[in-house]
Image (cartoon, rainbow, N blue to C red; front, top):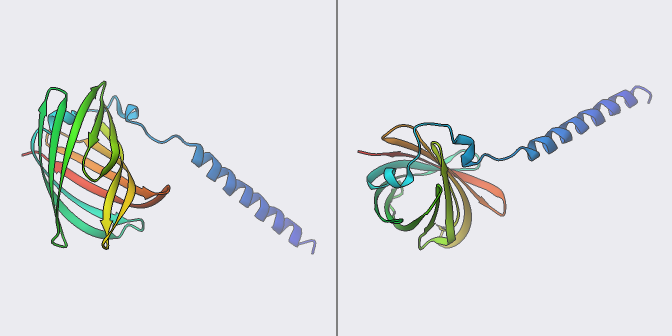
Length: 185
């Protein structure tokens, strides 16, 4: 039995170290748009999403498996501080979807958006080359509609390209990601 005690101490020490690492990593702050304030080229949400834009994307489940691929044709129009962004989706399974965003520029890099499948209001904030929108969306799955939370990040790469990654969750559990590449003609 005496030889078991050092082994148990090592196991207890390793467990304590692992728990400490989890607690410390859990305390790390999540990124905010302000973290990208100095990054260029600047994200100009209104300017970039005015006129036609094309996107190619995919949805991956939480294991990283590609579940669905899609393309999107977008057209944005602004008048004063309000805008409309029309999105026409074509999915790899042959289905189609249309979403029309009604957007408001609140000033100071803040935006809000509404659409028929958005629960409440989508809240957006841009700084530097980044834009973050957070919202709850009603998503049809196998004949039923579920509400999922989206943490949606866009990054301006150059005059033509914006990359987008949206993490999807329910009850705080990560379910998958939507990845898109937007391009202007």
